[in-house]
Amino acid sequence: MSVFDRLWVGVAQKNGFNMSLYFFRISHGRYSGASDQGSEFESREAAWAEMTKVCGNLVGGISRSLKQNAEWHMELLDEAKKPVFRIRLVAETLA
Image (cartoon, rainbow, N blue to C red; front, side, top):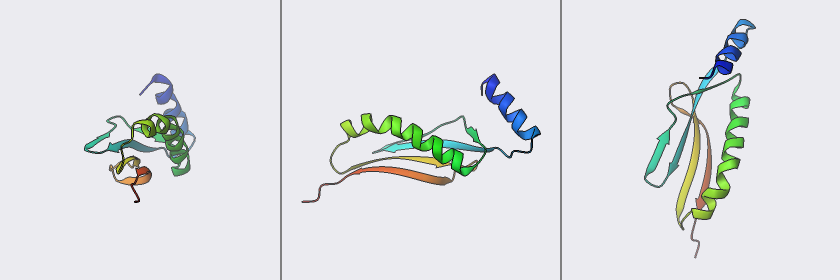
C-alpha cells in the first residue's frame, strides 16, 4: 500500500468512512489468479466502478486472443475472498 493509500485510509477512518478490502481474481481456461494485495473502497458501488474500469482496459486485448468455446472472467472478492461481482467474456460456437 502506498503512502497516499495509507493516508487516505487514515483520513477515511478518522472521518467515519468504513473502508472495505477487496481483491481481484482473473480466470482464463486453466489459469486462475487472485491478487495478493487488496484494494480498499468506501462502498460496493465504488469497488464495482473500479472493477468495470479495469476490466474495460483489459477486455480488448483479451478478446483478440480468446479461442472458440473459451471463457475469461474477472471477479471482485471480499475480504474473505468470496466473490461479490463477476464479469464474463464467453466465446461460444453455436452451429
